[in-house]
Image 1: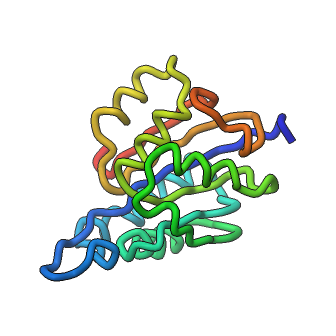
Image 2 (image 1 turned 180 degrees about the vertical axis):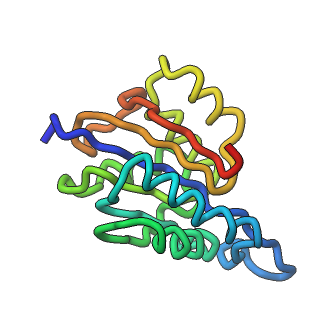
Length: 170
């Protein structure tokens, strides 16, 4: 299975609201997040086509982002993964390593700083332009696409080509 091209789409949740007294995990999407999620889903579909699996943070804003994106995407399976909430890049790399071998196109929907750290960890250092964009700002609802021809459990620092980085305004 090492010759299978795998695409990992790393997405930050949509812009959230900050209602008074609502715990972080329960913050809903704001108007901008509600507007951006379907738009970004269509861009993701143009980039990668059908998804085999979506791995989503359990935080409300991430779940709501996914619900809006799912209406625009074809996806085989969806899994809520508690480790995606409040994870750093290396912790998200553990989630990637456990992805099923039969999934070639996977979306991980999470939070900053974990999503940008995951992308910067996996991306080949030669991808300077896109790495620079990701490193300077990974806005809400942005998506990065990483590509590698290796099993998920062999994804390691610098192993993937950073194929695309899209933002709602870009």
